[in-house]
Amino acid sequence: MKLSNRTILGLTLIMALTTSMVFATSPVKGPVLYFNPVETRQEKGDNAWKNAGKAGGEVRKGEGKPSLEVGPIEIPSIGLKADDAAWYTATKSKSVFANEAEDDKAPVVNLENFTLGLLMRVNGPYFAEENIIIGIQTEGKIPPRAHEQVIRIWLDVAGKGIVQNVSIAQNVIQARHDFSNRRNKLKLGENEWHWVHVVFESGVSMTTYLDGKEAASNPTEVKWNAEHDLNLHGIFTSNFEVQQRTCNCSIAIYRVYDRVLTPDEISKNVRNSLAVDPAGKLAITWGKMKRGF
Image 1: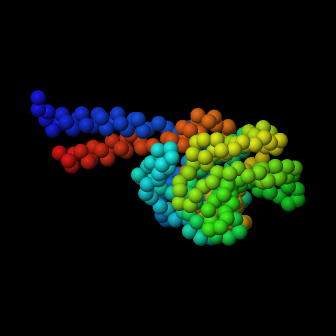
Image 2: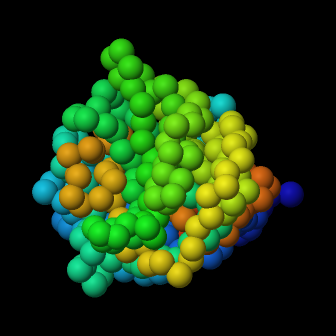
Image 3: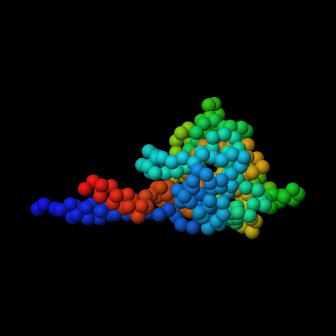
């Protein structure tokens, strides 16, 4: 039996839609911070990175602005590949997104337990001082600073800039060294995309994951107080005042949840955050097929 072109087109379209659904599993919903240039439709002329999370707002550029890039992202070890991804890359010191406390467009988050996720790539040796990837903190008044709470993730580098580990500092004053003296080795190499997750359960533990697999877990007595506003944000840096500590890296996705994600939820985010939208894929497939017939 010979099928008409119209019938073949219809069958192919159904198959395409079905295939799209396989790849369309959503990441875990409800992040308070969600920075993804694809999700917020960033353009090269944008001078702020918009937050698609529940806290809303945006984080504006520092002295310079990271470069917006598009292309494929691949993590071969877990079989992750996306052809149409987008990310920001810091090209020199002070090319960051950051805000000051008086910036009323900046997100304000309140955290006790939290999960932080980064889809990132290290591009080379540090520009100056340190390689700080992200920072969130309270305003920090001097004096007193008894309630200051800080999250910072930075890269320790050696030799020609190969990354040795990623660490986080919970800078609650009464226990400020609790995490800063502990190293959670993740062994990231240059020019490799990786998913890094940090899970903090107040007064219990901090656990790091690399590409969805647990890398290290440490107990902690540090307890966070969700009543304090975290209103200083830095991407590629710790905060606005110290933006010379720019990370020589690229960031495609940056999320913060105000709860502890389970290992299964982290795995879901790792594998599904770059999923193809079925409606978009269907439109592209439809156009290609129509041109083909």
